[in-house]
Amino acid sequence: MKNLILLIWGFFVFTNTNAQTELRPANIEIPITVFDNSGLPDNSRVLTCGIDSMATDSIDTLLGEFWLFCPFAINGNSSDCIPYDHFEAVLDIPVDPPPGSFEFGSWKDFRYGVIPYSGIETYTIIYLPYNAATALYFSWDFPEGVSGVLQDPIGGVILNYSMPDSGTFTHPYFMQLNWVLLFLTYQNVIPVELISFTASVLQNENAVQLNWTTATEINNSGFEILRGVYPANSGTQNDNEWKNIGFVPGFGTTTEPKSYSFVDNGVTTGTYKYRLKQIDFDGSFEYSNEIEVAVDFTPKEFLLYQNYPNPFNPTTKIKYTIPNVETHRDASLQMVTLKVYDVLGNEVATLVNEEKQPGVYEVEFDASNLSSGIYFYQLKAGNFISIKKMVLLR
Image (cartoon, rainbow, N blue to C red):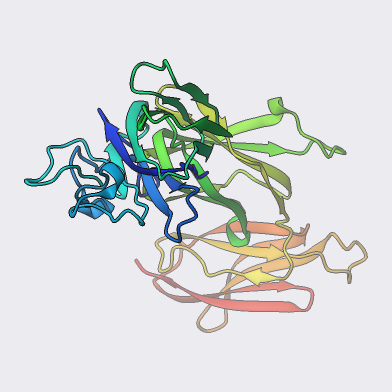
């Protein structure tokens, strides 16, 4: 988020009228540095304004706002005010002043706004320049969605300057003009902010898991998950090659970080691209950046998995993997046997007895004709042998 720097030569107060502002957790926060050209050692202050969904039209101590009595007076000639050789600046709060005070304000002013916020908020810059001050200097770098106007309090007759996204402005000081209005326009300035988007291969599940996190969300209906595959012999991908493979609901509007995940089970060995299509409740949408993941589910070693379910009655499934081993006349084939034995070592079933290509396989074992008890199943492929135990429980 960009910072707004507002530079003012002179002794002044930063106040506001008819206001509501957005600020805080991930809301709109605009620091404002104010100083004069008097050459005094303490001639600058950093103020902060913006929008906060928890703000009110009074002093909010939890937001860093506090009372400051009599922040300005003619030449500083008041026992209640800042000495003449000291420069001050505050953000005024539009409420009744406390008893006995001449003026009041705060270093911070957060106006109320339901995020995303659209509207115009008015701040009053009150100043009393030192004798050496001759001009007001402004420079700014607004957050996205914020623009401003500087105007005199008599309808823009003396000063009426539109402030773009960023820039600088110099205005000669007029003794008859000791305060100006700053109008800030906010336009839905807190979007869905994606701070991470990653993919990982779930080798044992033949799937890809996507994970992403948002810092803030505004009217977020959710995310469409888009997957693309590079066409054969091509390193490029067109928009019409993206496929919608799922939808994950969003959290609507929130200033708290949120984490999401999605598992894509529809992949095989290959190179894939993924991106998110974030959709608002009003139908508008934006795409995330693209991420690429290379998927290779070719088994790297012989594996015999535990049957599932176990115990079972009367059927169970047995999964195994066959890698590519360069010991056969045809390296892509392996002679594989999968047999079942009872506790005495008697063979009770042959489930596989043939040459297999490298890959992941699953076979069902039906023990309807067997009695309850412990059984063993053995996988043999070349020099590889693995045995596991299973329980038939009727």
